[in-house]
Length: 457
Image 1: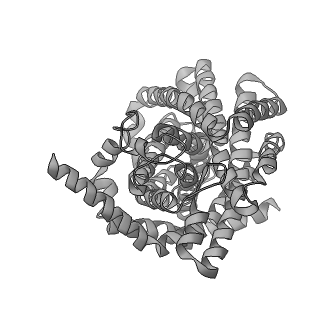
Image 2 (image 1 turned 90 degrees about the vertical axis):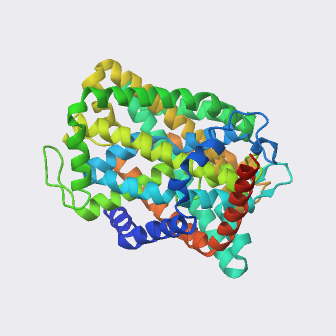
């Protein structure tokens, strides 16, 4: 059964899906005049530059979460095991060249995610309970309409439900539990029970706003902790950085031979693992983060869409790159280890035993906040498939899989995750392509407003 899972995953992440992902992202990039590169300063100004301002334009708009809370919640769900265990697993299987394909996916993925967020806000709806619901299933159904819209919207909603359970309930919780056991000797089942108990308190009693508040307080310090930790490892091995980049670029286009405990890899394997882990990490193309952004206070869909560009940059260009450099420059990448254990080994080479403690705490914060952040996506898919009233009862299912996942083999979990990502990407990318005219119209409307504001000043 596991071999069949691997075969399906490799098929999904073959050339056709790469062409779809890169092709749509490149089309959006060209259509907006390379906005994510040419106007990156504007993106920073309209996101980080405004996110803490109480009187910012976006905070005056309709929505549940403040821009800062939405950003923190999305980053909590986006930056997790994919950045620590996912990058390590990609390099362990596909070699250093896998990181190059993560960068490619991130560069064009910035516009893909911007389009997802923009369309999600444009087509969101307000439920009877006053909460906002949005995401790909909504813009697919409302935007495309007819039989195609209903079919692709339903297909996406089912795929999102499976992905959330696979990612949040399996990957994140398994990474948390195995890291805690590896570092502190905590039994796997204990981690699972504690995680579920804390989550019930936060999610059931507090809802979306409580999740936003929690992530807003936890996410910034955990980023700082992890970035400082990885930077110290990279700086300690600064002499190996040029060689590391050389390996990344060289083996992105050539087979990587076997080295030490590394079994070797093909070009297709490096490309496939890099792409799948890149998308799994920054979620560009999945549309999952857009379900959170659909709840945000904003004055215009494209304004909120800029947060999508920022998230991909932070997630992949900054954090994933630092993880990869720490693993490669420290020399542990070819040890035969994989997942979070490989990253833990990289930290230990410089930080010693304290390094594993520091990283383990960061992993626990990353993965737990990711698990919480994913509940917003779980609730959105559940509401779409079963109705708003059913959510009151079906929310309890979210707390069941983690108890089982903590004891599952990591290889099987990542294969399930890769499959889930593949199935969710296909309907979403088709919809974005078909709705690109709507996105470009909103894009021109908002950038035209910015040009007028600039002319006045």
